[in-house]
Image 1 (cartoon, rainbow, N blue to C red):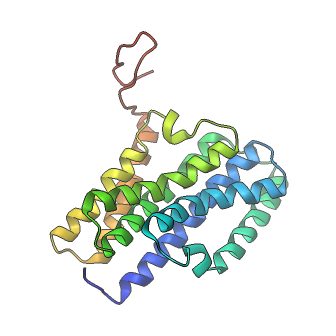
Image 2 (image 1 turned 45 degrees about the vertical axis):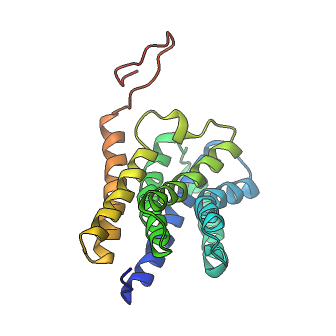
Length: 220
């Protein structure tokens, strides 16, 4: 793998932005469920750090990324306190729709970052792409489970994990073509986020099973 001086800095920036985006999605979900301050911080933390932690466990990376960059924990607490104060002052009622956009941003960034880290360890492309999908989706799964919801990654028939999967292959393809690492990471993140955003805007849905056992045409 090419080891450009700017790549570690770019990956850190990507992971930091993705962490903030997922933390915001967790915060909005916790606020929507009317959890207390501790609950808001826990749910935001699970959304922000859950996928990356599972990735680090599977890749045997130590220390965990949030231990190595402990300042992110302070940033998470500051975000939770500031957002709760702002939501109360503005009397803003969080909705599931409001949560979807920071979630889409985090999805793309985490899928690209996770795939890149796995490729850097010399793992096969399919394994690296799946590591990116795990990084991008597992935090949201934990967030929804703690909030007593079926994870949106499983019940939302609009493409979600599929977007992360495609974004991961964009990164693999960029490396195979010899493209610059930084541009490849950003292209992969943009692809996954863009596909998810397009699915939200158009309400495109993947084919699903109807109640009579027949596959539907993708619309409910």
